[in-house]
Image (tube, rainbow, N blue to C red; front, side, top):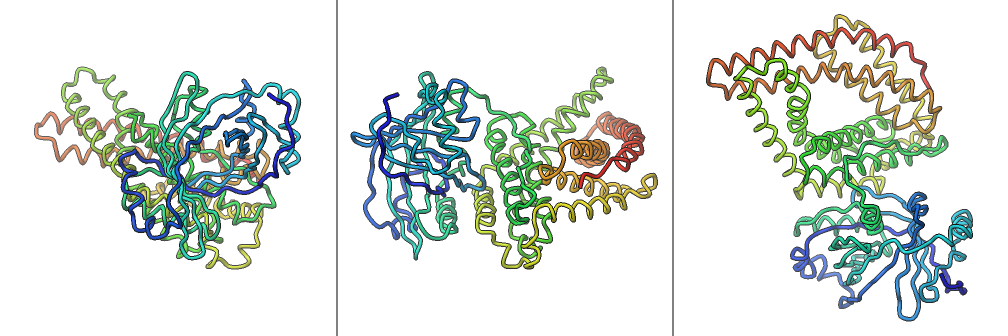
Length: 518
């Protein structure tokens, strides 16, 4: 790397943008859309942008959530350094530094974050930096002005590549230059109504790293966000909700393109976590302030539920039944009918996730979170709470509620047991949301006991759900043997439920004895 010379002044800012992916054919009518044509300030400018991204062989920068690139700009380079930031509901927000440097030269001295600058300027790190991938695309750029808001609209077409792999880039970026972030979502919603697109959660750098490492996509599980005890409760909610939304989007392509049942499961988990987060922070978010968001989430959950229920039956219950009764011919009919229902429900789930309604939901939730739309109805005393204060109050209340619901455990009705399961699930989500504030060891012990309880209650619920699935198959049965095998499976599931219920009392006792961590 050449010896750095003093670059021009650095720009330290927060980049706020929405990315929308689509194919090249879908882009053609975009410039003629009323919201674009009526608000463009000048004719679009097209130029080629070729950028090289740097890291070490051990990917030290990626590990730290830092992206460093050089983009040729005439006889100089434009150096950009970005931090990981957040990406959820279509909105990307990242802190970045941009500055011109001598051609092909990196210079970190302009970074005003002392800790980051000192780390990047370490001799061993500088020595090991090398190109890892590049992006090469043509950008057609225009500026939109709507009221007092200015948005840069960029259409990027090209590819991200490594020496051995390449992946096409075809996307629209809407970047807020000045004004209200809600305007980004307004434009994105208008594009969603007119064009087939996808809300893109990944940056070009993320895509480049995946190519470089040849990483295989897989189902994305929930991760609890980092919350400081003195963080405001309001800021804590935004982080928690964004983590749920990010999990939802991370499993979207897998559900659309793969038959792996875990994608459906993890999307449902993300939806439940997000709805639970809104419930957990109920003191902060009045019901009337969240209903417009919760209703679409409820719709999507309904579109995914059948797919998950059939997956559980076919992948977990049915193999055991088939193994024990391999000679029973009617079971072949049952398996074929169940698989047909599974495929039908999976297509329904894919249709929902591939729809404009789903994309509109993502953008609506993203705008709701980005603008903190609920705060106008939030009591001032709730806004003054810290994350720890809210955590302690919420966990104590939900713990007490769960203990009360399980007081007469042996005599609970099916409906009461279902309510116990929901209470356990909500408490576990709340504990996980706030886990980073408290002792890791104590949180793990408490959540572990809750997970065992939730697992037993969940299996009992699966048995009840299976009965509903068998009712649907009964309507398709014509032969006595087919009705007979359905009766046999009901009996098997009932026997399994009895054995499962015997584990309930011990795990309940274990939960009652575990130490609270707050």
